[in-house]
Image 1 (tube, helix red, strand yellow):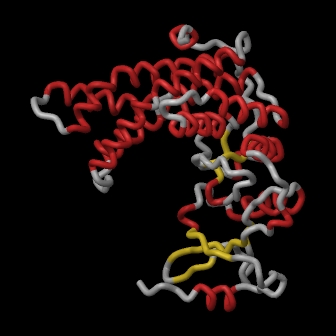
Image 2 (cartoon, rainbow, N blue to C red; image 1 turned 90 degrees about the vertical axis):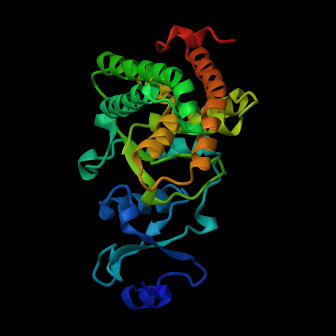
Image 3 (cartoon, rainbow, N blue to C red; image 1 turned 60 degrees about the vertical axis):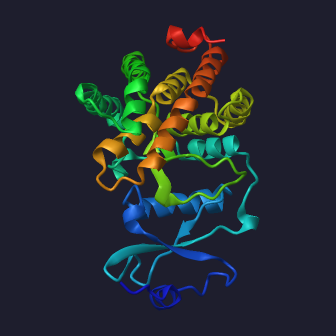
Length: 320
């Protein structure tokens, strides 16, 4: 396929007269948007950027009044980077809180792809699939380096996952009235101040999704050192704008306890025919195992920080 002349596409299909010539534009493939309701995404992007000062990439309509433009058989959305003068300077925790607070109550019916209602069953089915692989691998005589690491560590991560699933079920019983959903991210991992927001990466879910993932990233980055100070700053900044409820704390904890990185890595090895190099997966698996202790430290810190506001598994509250 020939690479499109994006400048020509933009000039031909869009009215750019109102766009400052210094503004940076880019095309994003629509298939890479988690949610496909571009109209609603664009409205939220406009509101957050223009009215709330968040550094959000906005979407532009073409001459047909649409946000998607077909080029060489694929749909693309033209987007514009925010101007620096439009931005308010936020820490990572404060900006995440602002995004969540301003979008709380987003209508999930407009975003049917939302995974929130199926989280417990998804957690369980993924663990079940790996447990079957574990049972099969134990009967085999020869194992690759990855498979041996998997066999050695699966029981620990299975226990974490089962605890997380039980917490999720218990929370749904204790709090039958779910908190309103908000705009979060497919995978929140950016700790830069006022990092750019791309609507393609937005996922309508409860706010524990981003908080747990942010803390999980801290555990990876702080491998071998105590991540508590960074976690405390992140949560303090967040709660100064949007305090956590008991329900949100419980969900945050169960998400962080679930061994997502381990599960995803093993899924790539066992179930993805297009998986990347085996050495890369071995590295990711070992990194996840090495960061397990740091994650436990974070879980213990959270249990102590919110002591009395939710129930944490006893084995995690005893870690020094």
